[in-house]
Image: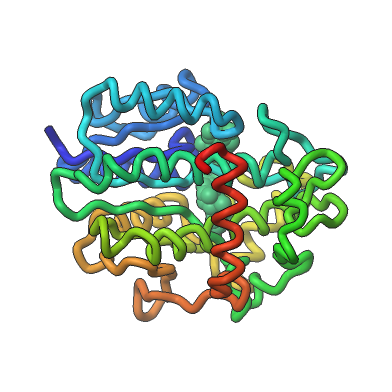
Amino acid sequence: QKQTAIITGASSGLGLNAAKALAATGEWHVVMACRDFLKAEQAAKKIGMPAGSYSILHLDLSSLESVRQFVQNFKASGRRLDALVCNAAIYMPTAKEPRFTADGFELSVGTNHLGHFLLTNLLLEDLKNAPNKQPRCIIVGSITGNTNTLAGNVPPKANLGDLSGLAAGVPSNNPMMDGQEFNGAKAYKDSKVACMMTVRQMHQRFHDATGITFASLYPGCIAETGLFREHVPLFKTLFPPFQKYITKGYVSEEEAGRRLAAVVSDPKLNKSGAYWSWSSTTGSFDNQVSEEVADDSKASKLWEISSKLVGLS
Ligand code: NDP
């Protein structure tokens, strides 16, 4: 059997392009963990992934029951596991009102953070026993986690505050992790900060004992993906050229996919606890994270609360 990577949200954008890049090596089989089977199948065919280089398994991260079912189905499939890539995300920058997961959590936090939190924990043992002996667990981060950049400082900035909203389960009367009023763009950024903190916690808690390499990354601004589907039309027209010519952070979907695939498989990118970014001159480097992401006592508190919310403790 080839090495196997699970990629969540592989039906479009970064996940799809990373799946394509990995499958193209001939050394990896990709399990596309997607909520829309037909969309994933059509996307894989359209982008030219050879039959047999991938399989599709249903996963809806906005339901903890679906996450548990996915893990059961994956285990029952008898496939080996060498890498887990938590890539799926939902972004609702123009939403005036919050939406909720099946379990009643605000949708961006519930999907991007809590769904992946449960998934990674349930698959840790399988990863630990990876046949390729160099297992990797990757959760895609965002530039919002590095406030040493222009884009990382665009308001509303991420801030998990005292985590009181999360502790309450980010429910309708308290839908933000910091317990403040709902803001769709901030909810997304907060969820990504939580993803990056989770990677650092996993590294500290499990790397030595399991040998798993835990990493996060910011692949660059992929201005044309579906992530911006809910944004206003003018934004969608102006955002790609703005990123190309002003911030110069623009990256094509294909190149971003190659970057994520490298974090999965490149022997050089095997540093656990890393947050990979790319510079046009020097290529990949382990970037500095924001002060909040680096706050390990807050991250530990985030871990304990998340663990309770998804039913692990
Ligand atoms: P896309 O919207 O193209 O891809 C997001 C994927 O997540 C889709 O496949 C979508 O599925 C899936 N998804 C959403 N909700 C769920 C759910 N409940 N269950 C399962 N899958 C779900 O966006 P990108 O490719 O841009 O985003 C991929 C990652 O890259 C995200 O983690 C994002 O935060 C990150 N990122 C993106 C940047 C960018 O500039 N675009 C910059 C930095 C980070 P479906 O096809 O069914 O909608």
